[in-house]
Image 1 (tube, rainbow, N blue to C red):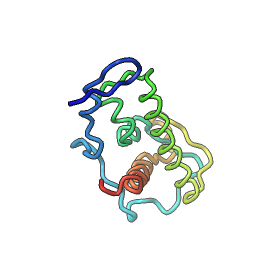
Image 2: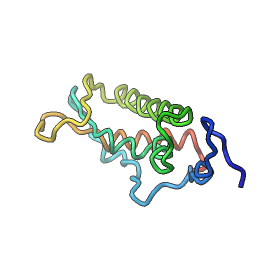
Image 3: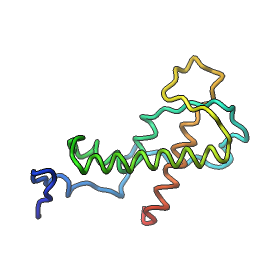
Length: 132
């Protein structure tokens, strides 16, 4: 198997990234019936739960790529773009104004939109990768 050169190092493990196969813990999109009709203008999201569903981010974590490498920086940019686009899509639908990341659960008056964001991320990734 030929090696891939990345940042002056040979890396065999990059060839072993399974880009299309989700781990067993991967979530499925939230059904439209489960989506609330109206959310408050302030919402919260559990970022780690969302990023665990983004293929580009999972590739970094699963393969142990050095986060300082050009490949990792590119994958992080892709993951951020998908995350941001998911929020922009949901903001257009639900009209929330403030998003709080990893807000403590005690803030009961703030709706948790993590599942909605995960569903939107999975939808965006299926558009980008129709074979998945």
